[in-house]
Picture 1 (cartoon, chains in turn cyan, orange):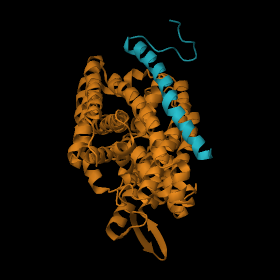
Picture 2 (picture 1 turned 90 degrees about the horizontal axis):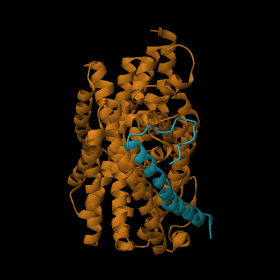
Picture 3 (picture 1 turned 90 degrees about the vertical axis):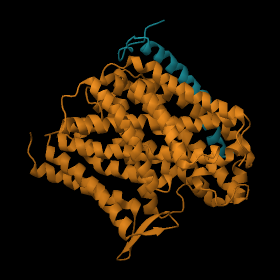
Picture 4 (picture 1 turned 45 degrees about the horizontal axis):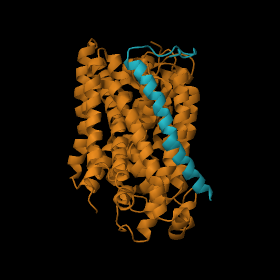
Length: 49
Length: 483
């Protein structure tokens, strides 16, 4: 396996599973924001749900 | 060209309908201009990641980079792409903190608050030209022609019309919400397509056997000054209007910094994926699978019906549309804001209420679309248009923006005005001179002029205009007075 192959598999991992994890976090934030709640204050832990 | 399967077409149609539905659903949420333009300044890190990555990378990154990689190889990732990584890293660590507490709505507004109205208008003009999503529109037109057999102008109009409709309805909220879906579709579809296309060409060993070692030279084989000119366009990151609009829409500075750091990883991965599939396309052209006269910007599209299975090809097409539309919608919003909030409002009517501002901004999106088509006709290649708009932006705004954020001391309106108007005039002058007296350079696909044994390429405008802007700033500091 060459360095080019390694780069390719890293890219696939980031663009595939990595992106889906970020999308789950976005869905959580959007649900809260569009539901009318304020985002967590800077530097404070997020409220538990 | 093999026809698309109806299943693929249904996937694309569903995607388009979903985007428009989002705009209609969110239209009722928009009450004040800050909601419309900055989503209430409440964006969190994950939302910023999605919207920054998907908006900043359009079809110029997907088709332009893959087309360039098919001809030039890994230099596209190393030399054209990584200076941007460095610039983004600096922006993440330094810019975010400097914007803390600023209540501006855009980069031009920020400069207007620092230097005054004249600078705001020059900045808005440069930002407007840069923010016109010419590259995405050109890519959409190429897609429509290759995949659907639709005339170039019609495909471009339909694609941009859909984007304008949902952002005009829902503003920044519709923009960021659709950006999230588009972010997922554009990244995941590329990740799925990559193994199929690389497999078709026998991986990198197959590419090496056809294209040779020349495709694997990180610094490339073009003239160093030409390569440096492209690498220097990375400076545009520091004055990217979209970044400022998103940073000003962020909930806090930590969210901005974290979003940029994650974005750097995602952009680098995306760059590598487009470079790899582009090189595969180049190898397939060289070995006769694709016609040798295939336009470079269309290489990737030509591979889709040949190598991607049913369903994946539809998803990939949806990914291409998502890549284009996430850029088109965001930049239309920025460009329209420049026209209305940064040019019309300070020049004509300062007392515009929020409802009128929103209505005018919606109308300005249509004007921006018309301007896009004009620029798209002038430039023949995606990379050319990218260099032109990035050069205008950097030459006009880099010096006054960095000075306003990082140089302590007096605010001198004349310094801002001379820096912005000087830089803008210098770029226009260089492009005009080369347009009138220059000759086409078929090898580098640009225009050139030989003066006293020195070759001037159109891309060198940056080397002239940024020093002119810096000189204007210094002159203004010496001659100008504080307000």
